[in-house]
Length: 401
Image (cartoon, rainbow, N blue to C red; front, side, top):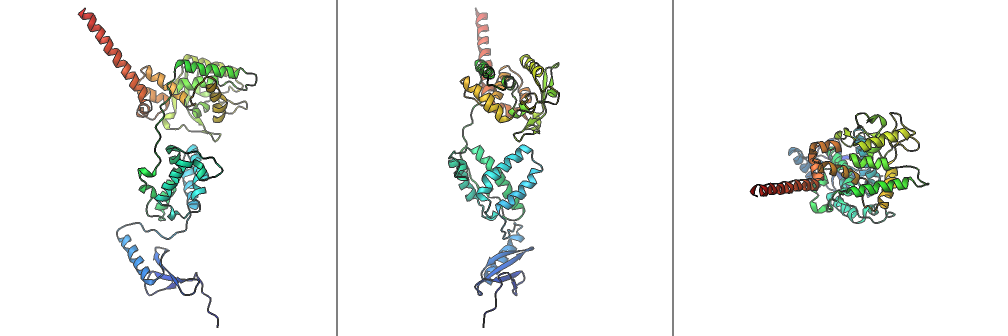
């Protein structure tokens, strides 16, 4: 006589309320479960283990602790749910960064992992691997290029967010990021001091840009853009987001209202303080007037720095075709963002109030400005103190004489 077929899906009650079991495929051993809310939590292979688990869960509930249920949700599944909720409220640029981190790094590495399996050790190990190998740790086709702390932190931000959602949904008791120590994170690299421009360096950069623009094969003159960025301290997205309607030639001002995103669309400025009115040096004002007169795209709604098709220039176009060749020809080891420091240094050296410097740079407060340009402020203060001391000593000597 054949044995009756055992269903691994049928659940049998016990004489203890809230405890059930299933018979495994071998027809003899069992898996016990404890009912928590509407879900069944795996509690062991014997009834005594199930009773112990039930008592443990009741104790947690009495103490007000979060009860974690047995769940097979993967990181990839929960990551999509988290991103869908965030993408509706984040700025497009930030949402793009998170999407890139998920697609490029986190889902390839942890997508199939159960959320409950992601602990502090897994995160710490992955962080150290990124510090040693970079994206090669995720994609072997990529070359080994170690990542710095800021890059790693940016890649891990969505991971922390997804695990925060897991806590809220009761899939894990607490966020593993809370257990990371300083030793688990890569060492922060020493912050690079902003480049301190000399007038001769800026002149060499502009001259090199003009030489490149005058070559027969050149298709664009980036010199007015570079002059404007260095004079006003604009971020590259802000420069590319400028329209002719933002320029008031009579008042000699320029409004920053938006930025051009790497996604190929207009977006809000980096911060609310980024919306600001800038006062133009006479030379920059004249550059803009001349540029508008000769531009094919000079209507109010046209971008000031338009491509040959009338759209804003792309970030890559400006850096790779405009700035970097000019900097190389001028013998300068600088980045486009360093042009922002040229404007800041000049304003600080001229003794302009730090609140006004912060306003012109689009910083949310002057503390940020003083932190970034502390060395410039220190030098300006020391110079003023030395001059005052020398002037005082000289005056005293004249009186005594």
